[in-house]
Length: 255
Image (cartoon, rainbow, N blue to C red; front, side, top):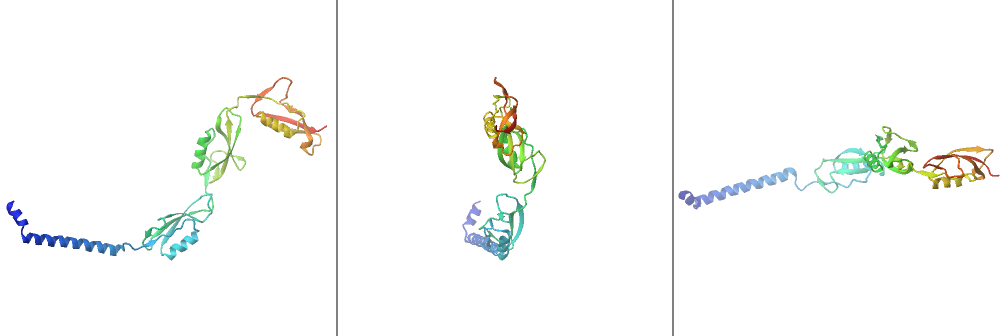
């Protein structure tokens, strides 16, 4: 051991160590600069901002820079068709020449989806389900039913729609919900002598609906007619019916 320690202190060892260290450092420097040269480190093309441009404008920019591109599409109802909605790599990043830039554009035609089964689901569940199918909730109306805020019917374009029917993505769906008061009774109003507008107002206040309308005589304008009969019939004593009951009326000319 003492001889080895003595050797480490000799000039010969120092010269050998320095030579080895310099050789190792030289190899590292050569490798580093060779790699920089080979990969053209620090050189590249800046990817332009393409989002919001038309596909034609985006392609022109990429071709002028010598970059390739591939195009995919999505459908976003609130954006104009044919514009770039996403790009990869992002703008202001550096890439080598001839690099492929991936573009996503908004297509003009909405893809179709099958309408999900939302009947008897809560409004919250129905909204979440419709959104997952990229459909939108429109107006919500209520009708008498023991279930509160539960979907009873769904409508698209005024037509009743059922699960499995095909709709364009982004379609607006109107819902009819239960009001939770289907078993409640309300007092039946006496509509005799009222105009149809007055009757509608009275029925709305009583949470009843207007049923069929029968006409007696030659009636040109319903504003000049009054109700002479109704069903169910009102009586001197209080008559109660279920909320939402349709009331049929007969109209005749004002005397």
